[in-house]
Image (tube, rainbow, N blue to C red; front, side, top):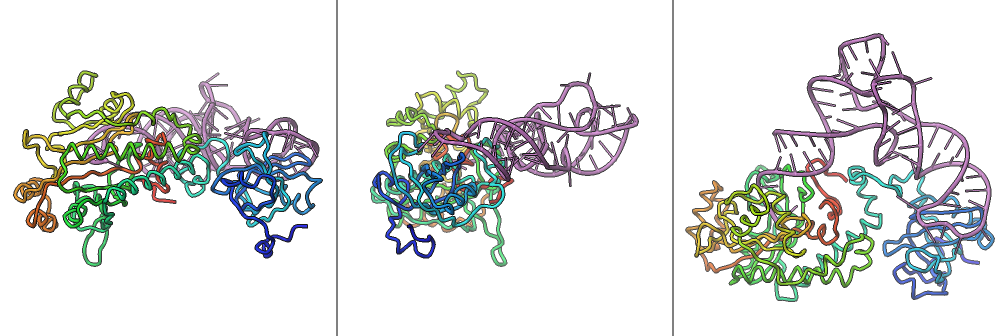
Length: 446
RNA sequence: UCCGGCAUAGCUCAGUCGGUAGAGCGGGUGACUGUUAAUCACCAUGUCCCUGGUUCGAGUCCAGGUGCCGGAGCCA
C-alpha cells in the first residue's frame, strides 16, 4: 500500500505536481498539495474540490476502493482545510474545472479547519469581504484579479526595460510635497516632521538628468477623504520620465505602452479574464491611435452633451465618464488644460501660455483618469515663480530648482495609476478589488 | 468637510397598522455510488448598532450619537 504520508512522502517516489500541469499526467499517480475548496458527498462516494493556487480539480473517493482511514478523513474534511492528496489522474467529461479528475488513493490532512470558514460560496457584501480580505483572496475571482495585476506590472516593466529605460526607486519618506500640501500623511521623523510620498516624479526628473530615460514603480499616498470607486489612500503608480521629449511624443509612448499591456493580458491571461467574465471585445478595440482632443474641445463637447461645466473648470466625475465613452471604447487624451487647474511644475504652451502642455488619459466605462502627464517647466525663473505662487516652502524645493540651474533640458513624463488600470482591464466595479490589501479612509486592516 | 442612503442570526436579507424574532445560505446530525454553488429530512443559532424619549407595549415612531456605503470636492 501507499506509505503513511508526512515523514515518508519524500521517499515515496510520488510525483508532486500542480493542477495547472495535470494534463501531463493522464493515467499516472501523482500528489497534489492544496486546500479544500468545496465538498460534495453521498453515502459511499465523496467529491473533494481541491485548489492549489494554480487551479481547481475534483478529487473522487469511492468508499469501497480506499482505506477506511482515508474514507473517514475525506468525510470529515472541512472547507479550506489544507491537504496533500495522492491519486490517479484521469480525463473525465463529468469533471468540472479542468476536464481531469483525481481518483483518491491517499490523503494527508495537513491542517483541519475547526469551526466555520467565514466565506461561503454564496453572496457576500463588499464591506464583509473587505474585512475578510486575507481570506477573500483565496476565491477564484480575486485570484484572477491578482494574476492580471501581476501580468500588467510585469508587462509595464518589460515595456520600459526593452526600450532602454532605467528603473530608479523613488523615496517613500520625503520632506516636501509634489502636489498639494493638504493631502499629505505626516509622520514623526526623529525630532522633525516628514511625509509619505505622493509621487516619485520630482525624483524621476533628477534621475532623468543623470540616466536619460527612467521610471519608477512604487506606492503613493494621498490623505484625501475620498470615498469613490476610483480612490485609495495608498496606491501604486508607474512614473516614467524622459529627456528631450515633447507632448505629442509623450502621448504616443503612453498609447503604445497601454496597447502593449492590454494585448499581453489578452494573450497570457485568457483563463483569468474568463473567470472574471470580462467582455474581451472591449479590450480588443484598445489599439492606437487614441483620440486626442484639447481641453477646449472637451469642454465644448461636454456642454453639447448637457454638462454644466464652464470653460476653466476641472472635470467632475460625470464629465470624465462622458468623455471616456465618446470614442468607441477607446481611451481618450485630453491635452492643454488651463494652467490654473494643473500642478505647479507644468510647462505652459508657448503658443498659448494660459494652457499647460499636459494631458490626461481617460478610460472608458467610468474608470476615469488612468494617466496624467506632460512637460515640466525647465526654466529656473518660471519654476521659482510658480513655487511662490503656490505658497510652497522654497527651501524644500531647492534641490528641485537645482535641476534648472545645472544643465536644464526639456523633459516630461507621466504617472499611471496601477489600481485604476487593473480595475479597468479586469472590469471590477471598484479599485478596492484591484489592490491586494486596499487602504481606504476608514480601513487599514487586514 | 458637505449631501444622500443603510444598520435585524456567521453571511445575504424579509419583517405589513406599534402587539410572542423570520427565510435562504452557512454550521451540526442523518439518508443517498457521479455530484457540478448536489439533493432530501431534522436541529441549533439574536445586545434587532448605541443612548434617551413617546406608548399599556418599540425591530417598527421621535431625538441625539456611532459605524459603514455611495457621491461631491481633490486626484492616479
